Length: 463
Figure: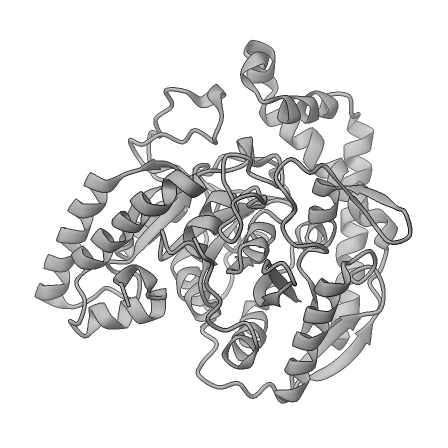
C-alpha cells in the first residue's frame, strides 16, 4: 500500500508511531495528484513547494515533541472558496482573476494550528452556484459529473489525491459530490463551524465541513474546526462535545427515523434498494426503526430558493454590474434572476424557514437520526440536463440533486452521507443521516457503525 492510500486515521497513527514521516506522506500525495489531475481536474492550484516545506517542519516538530494531534502532518485540500493567506481564492471564476487572500480563514487557521499540510485548492462550481462542477470529472467515471459545488474536494479525496478536504454546503454541496464519488461528507449544524474568510453563496444557508474517506476521519477533522468565532455572526458557542464515534458498532437505543414521504419519492430503484438495505443493516446493529412523516414538504424548495437566490445576488451585486461578461452563463442567469425577487419574497422565505425548522424539531422529538437517500440518482453523464422519472415527470439534474439535501440547509440540522454500495453501472450510492441540531455525535455513531459492517467498505474508484 502506498502512503497516499491511507485513511486519515491510519496515516495519523503511522505518523504518531514513527512508521511514516509527514514528508513521505505528502510526497506520495503530491505524486498521486500529478497522476490523476490531468484526467480528473480536481485542483485549481497545487501548492507543492509550500506543502513540502510544511511537511518538513511538521516532521521536525514531531521528532522533537510528538504530534499536536491527529491532523499533524496530514495532507489536506481546500475548496477554492476558503482563504489561505497569500494564495488565490478564485472561486473557480474569471471574476476573481489576480485575487490574493489577505489572511487565513478561520477554518484554514484552525487546520494549520492542528498541523495539517495544505496541498492545494480544489475546483468548485463557479462561486458554489451549481451542483455539477463542470471543470472536474467523476472519480469513478470520467464521462460523468463530479457533483457540486464541492466537486473538486470530493474527487480529490475519492481519487486518493488528498487525505481529506474541506467543502462548503448551501444546498447539498458537500453531500452531493461526496455521494456521487463514494466518500463521506459531513454538513455540520448551522453555526457550528465558523465561515469567516470563506466566500459566501448564501449567508443564511452556508456551511463548511469535511470530506473524508471514513466517518472516523470526518469526526477528527470536525474536532479541529468547531468553536465560536465572533467574526462570523452566525457562529455559536456550542458546548464542547467529543464527536468521535468510538470502536463499537452496537446501535442499541438509537432511534432511526425512516421517512414515509418525500425522501423516497422520485428516487431511482437502485438507489432506493441500496439505501433501504443500509437502513435494515442499522436495525440489525440494534437501532430501532421509527416511521416518520416529513412535514411541510411543499414549502422546502420554495423556501430554499427564496433564501439562497436573493442572498447570492446581493453578494455579487457590484461585480455583476461591473463585469457581467466574466461570469459563466448558468451562474449569471441565476444571479440576474435573484435581482428580480422582492424583499417580501425573502421575508416570506425567512418566515417559512422558521416554521419548517420548528416542524422538523417537533418531528425529531421521536427519533435521534433520520436515514434517507442522499441523492435520488447516481452521477449522470456530463452535459445531461434533465431526468425523466417513471411517471413521466421531468426534473432538471440540478433540481434532482438538491431536492433531498436542501432540507438540512433550510433547517440547519447536521447531515452526513456515507457510501452504501454501487449501482449496476458501478457508480456510488450514498445514504444520508440527519440529526437534531448539534446532534453530530448520533449521526457519526450511526454512520460509523454502518461503515464498519456494511457492504460498501473498501470501495475504490478506478481513477
